[in-house]
Amino acid sequence: MNIKQLGWNAHFESHFENYRGQDLVPARVIRVGGGFYTLLGADGEQTATLAGQLRHGSTQDALPAVGDWVGIDSPQEGGIRIHAILPRQTALKRATVSNRKGLVEKPGVPQVLAANVDIAIIVCGLNRDYNPRRIERYLTLVHESGAMPLIVLNKSDICPETQARRAEIESIAFGTPVLVTSAQCGDGLDELASHLKAGSTLVLIGSSGAGKSTLLNRLACAEHQQTSEISAAVGKGMHTTTHRELFPLPGGALVIDTPGLRELHLWGESEAGLASTFPEVIGFAAQCRFSDCQHDQEPDCGIRQALHDGTLDPARLESYLKQRAEIASATLQSELAAQVAQKRKRKTIPRQGKRWRREHGDGQ
Ligand SMILES: Nc1nc2c(ncn2[C@@H]2O[C@H](COP(=O)(O)OP(=O)(O)OP(=O)(O)O)[C@@H](O)[C@H]2O)c(=O)[nH]1
Ligand SMILES: [Mg+2]
Ligand SMILES: [Zn+2]
Image (cartoon, rainbow, N blue to C red):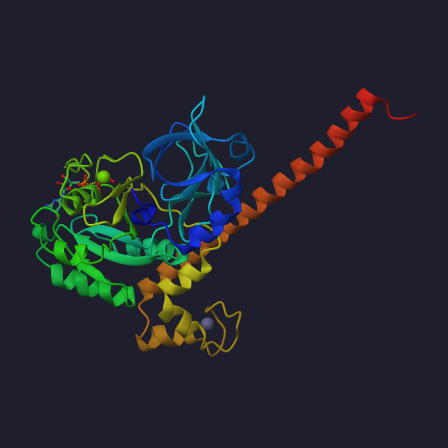
């Protein structure tokens, strides 16, 4: 297989120069699980593990994710090892969430959902899944990642007001294409397929049960992924897909299917993504007299004026403020995590020093 067909380009070529002398070859991560990485490269599919220098001391976002390009050694006793991860062109990141006991597993460290993605397809079902506010959260995530967003409203076959919903989403999409599809009947799939260019990487994201895997199977003309009915009781998906995985499609595009997220927590440092999702809110805020206006009691407030004139939808403002607060709290959490790590480092160095003096005598 030619690695250009897997999305290899000049960016990766130039970064790989540093590793040429180390006898490494490039490969792309297509699946991650249980400490093993499934890769696709010039030699086809291979399984690899991490070399020691990557295993120790790497935070979660610095470990290979689906879509990453990595440098591997040649097969030897003990298998193939990943020695390097090439700098990502784009990365979809979310804040790590609390586990069932309410504890945050790795506070302040984002999780990379997919790397080196050209287009992120935000899939939303036109049933009880339909939720413009949730689409806005996904838009912030995608804008921040560097990938291009594409919104797909799926299940048009069971929705009597398809056009009204498309118009509603177009009014908050600010130029992001909005497609209406039925993975079941095939409507809109040709238009969706026209966005799948050979060698480009796309990822399907959205709630469980939205129809991501059904869309992938239809686009691939193959039953790559298992799908299952949504729960009749709660109208939600059953979390059928459990792993992120990249599939090369017959037309040459590379599509990553992902498990539906229970909740999408925005990662700190997503302010630029937030601004791209809410350009009109940013525009009205720019008209406030004070640059630090809280849009509360201050005179000449552009936001309050727009609300008064009816040019700003209060639901959009509420959505913006909610996302902004979430991003601020995630940023704070990562700063605290960095401080704790720094403190720990400061403590271990004197401790190591003490041990050295104990073992070698302190010269007194
Ligand atoms: N009526 C209708 N049903 C659909 C459509 N697309 C998918 N479904 C059904 O919706 C259910 C969930 O589809 P999946 O493809 O498994 O959903 P998913 O987004 O992959 O869900 P997770 O893997 O749990 O994240 C299945 O029963 C599909 O047959 C559609 O366009 N119309
Ligand atoms: Mg699925
Ligand atoms: Zn204001």
